[in-house]
Length: 291
Figure: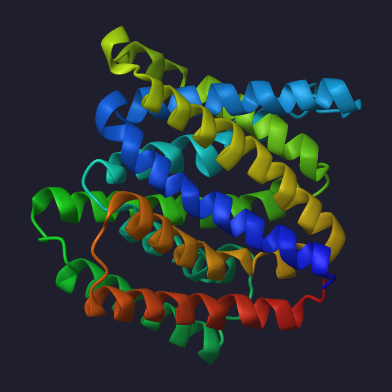
């Protein structure tokens, strides 16, 4: 990859890793449903505005069903699940659990795309399970009922991302990347629109919360999508997927630096296992599908 592509990759990982920081700040105040809908609505408006300025085409006619389905499983559901998880889990936990997505993706691809589940991928899946167990069971946070449910929600969000990737490859492969990004955000905002009913009250919106919501929506979602799909266009989807290896690094870093989260040896070991699991799965995909 060119230096500019590497820079975009690192920037994308920093932005997506930062999303867990902002979720941790805002979710306990605004609630997961309202926060997720606000994030989606602002991100969708930002991407549509960008399309209008640049002359980009989203083309809703004939594609709205795909936008709704992909938006539901790639944004609405995982955003809400990770927002719920952020109410009880440190940002660093959520970032590491998010990295299990390619592991689930390998399983779903074997089930629905007839991709071979190789020894390397099976090893990666087992390493991912071990990493999650180590993180949740022996990390610095006491694994009570709320923590376990939050961890399951985060894993469910990772599953949603994996399922969305498989669905997109089967049903929406011909849609342009930017149109898919913008259209799916609009679809997700529509799917989760009942979330506005969970209005937390005007007193919840201090300056810090408003700034965090805007950063989460505009920077960590809309801008991140633009960088991601630019990467796909420049280096291919397989190489762009290596961002998954870097997100936990930044997620943990931001949590420790800005939120004072504890970084224990068991957490480092669990996170390392998850990253190795992701590398085993994504690395094989990169070898099989040149970018």
